[in-house]
Each structure stands twice: as structure tokens, then as C-alpha cells.
Length: 179
Image 1 (cartoon, rainbow, N blue to C red):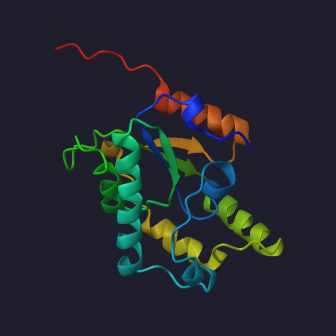
Image 2 (image 1 turned 30 degrees about the horizontal axis):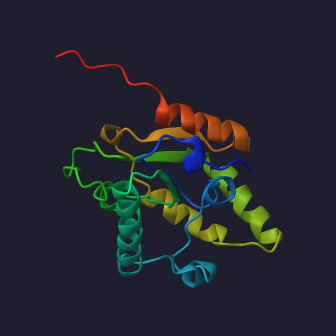
């Protein structure tokens, strides 16, 4: 699987690959795994007390990369707007609520049936990360607001097409705004 790496991206960006479990975050791109995985393996949803310190650790890592001018790709469910705001705030120039940040989000989007099949397949292969029974709770937590301009990519694409779609969405030339 081709990775999005600093050598094939423009520098000074943070890209958060997001989505519910089974969307393909860990299989398709860079994975940062600092979560309380044991709880999820046991089928126990994470609490805010589990999530916030972990998100703040990831925010610090994003900030360090941005300050040093590097490009970083992070894989995280980032299901709620408040969690994405933590990541956006890694950009020292970010104004809370503006959604204009060097941290960009890509949602790996797939139907619930596809996600459940993937989770069941992982479990059958002895590679369960999170039981399929938690999928519905994640889908219910997923909050996408159009004002955030989150890029959506079809999570059923083959890996190379997925990477190409993400690169096109994130690095497409922007039209100048006439004032």
C-alpha cells in the first residue's frame, strides 16, 4: 500500500484520516495508535476521560510537525467536531470555530453494511481491533458539519485510488478569491 509521506506531499500540512472503525484508516494509510485499545478489544466504548488526554497528545505531535514545516498524516476516528477542533488548534494561527487550519480532514466514507462486513472479516482473521457491536455507537457519534469542509472519500476504493483521491482533494490548486 502506498503511503502518503513527507517525500510525496507538500510540506507544512497535517492530514487527519478519519472515520468509524472498519472504514480503513489503519489498513490504508499511516496509523498512530495511542488509544486505550484494551477497552475497545473488550467491546467497551471509550469515555471522554479516555479520549481527551489522547487527543491532546496527538495535538502536540501535530503542532510539533507543523512548527517544523513537516507534513504529517494521522489516522484517528475524530468522530465529533470538538475532537477535530482539538486537532485544528495544533495550528498556531487557527482561530477557534473558523475551520481554516493547516490541519485538514479526510473522512473515509462507507455504508454501515460495508463497515460491519470489514469488522466481521477482521474478527474471523483473528485481527479484531474493535468488535462490530460498537459500530452503531460510532455511527451515532459521527458528526459532520458541512461548514467544516471535510473532504469525503469513498472508503471502498482500492488503496492506490484512495491515496490518489486524497492527494487530489487536499492538494488541488485553490482558486484566488476576488476581493
